[in-house]
Length: 427
Image (cartoon, rainbow, N blue to C red; front, side, top):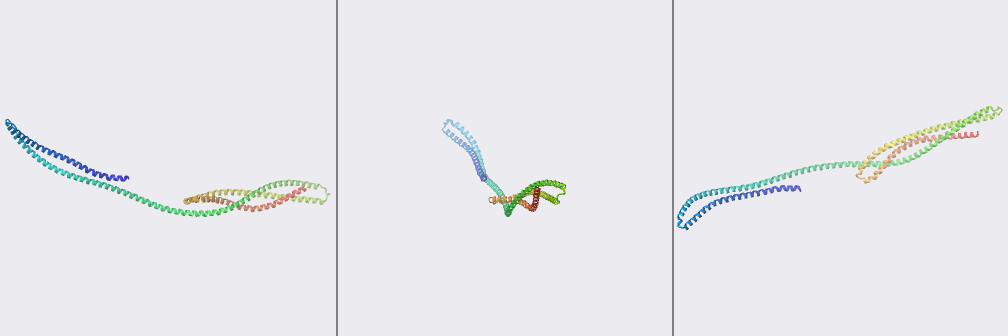
């Protein structure tokens, strides 16, 4: 709107100038013509004034003549004198009239000259008005040319702006094509990642089932280890009881040795009169008891050695189990870090794909994270359980033999201890 009003002002102002200037010139010419007419009227008035004076003088002379007729004869002399004076004045007046006629001729010539000048002036004024109109037309044309130049410059600016817009549109189209290609590549990557995620999901599912089976096995192994720990505690308790029994047996042995010494001394002091058959039987019985006691002692010593050895083996196994548990904890931490990084990468992939289908993927994502967590924890537990299984297999193989040997050896000393106790009771 502002541009249209400015253009209208630019067009109207020169038109107003072109209309006002000729009017002003025509008014000035009219004023000049009036002034010149007034001057010519004044000149004509002056010439007519001189004619009036002449006619007035003629009328006066006529009046004087009439007065001379009507006057009395007594004033004839005076009239004659006056006539003479009038005649003298006539010559003067004629001279003045001739001068006035000459002046009239000059004034008429001057009037004709002035008329010619006025005509020339009018022609010049007309030419000047024409020139003013032409100048106004030129000004209008100049203004129009300037307006057209401004329009041309504005059109050039608009064309440059349009060229810039076209360039920007081309750049935007190129960027759109580039981003479309990038979007296609990203969609392909997302599809690949989804395929990998599905494969990993199936693998994780299989591993989850395997881990559940391993967890069941690990629970069985844990129960077996608890039973082993209980057996170890029982064995330690039995070793303590056996040590107490050994101490009692040693005390009994010392008592028996003292009795043997007393029996030998009493046997030496016994009279030779007693029957030789009785001495031989007592001696052989004592020898048998000594041999049995020696065997019992050797068996008890073997039992103590075996119990100490089994205790040391069990302690070593406990130390190994503790070291393995520490290693498993470290491996868990490392695997957790690795899995967290993997989860972060998977999370990024899911975020890229989540822009397309975020509402449907949230529960799937949570399930996938849970399964990944279970899979990681299951891997760590499974490794620990496998190591425990192998060690447990070795321990069970070793433990079965050792327990069987221990049962056999433990069974024999108990018999020996019972026999020794019965023998002591008999004594």
